[in-house]
Length: 132
Image 1 (spheres, rainbow, N blue to C red):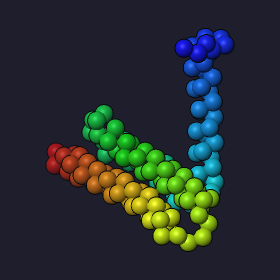
Image 2 (image 1 turned 120 degrees about the vertical axis):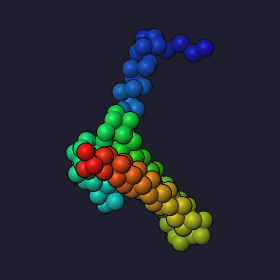
Image 3 (image 1 turned 135 degrees about the vertical axis):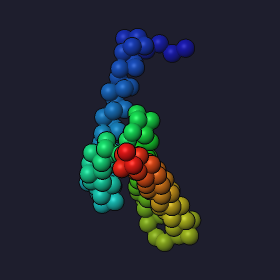
Image 4 (image 1 turned 90 degrees about the vertical axis):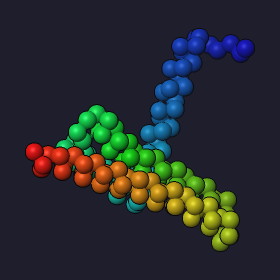
């Protein structure tokens, strides 16, 4: 096994700090250069209070906020794929286009999941409140 200077705790701390820095850099970059990501972040900010109202339980809250995070995560991955494809294949290529379309389809499916979960929980929990 390879010895690390400062021990395991020091290594874990350095990795955690380094990884966090790179992750924040990626979030800033996506927010700066990707309009779709900015729109989705805006929707998270706007819909979060509504989610607190709609949720009837901690599990509902986890589903509502989890689906919002899935959309953001998928958009980050889509943006990363598009950037790499544009880097390695600046000219039109069938496989490059297919990769971008498939990544876009993943975003669309994550949004569909978001809408289905939000509508189902809103319907269930608001109807329960109105019915009382």
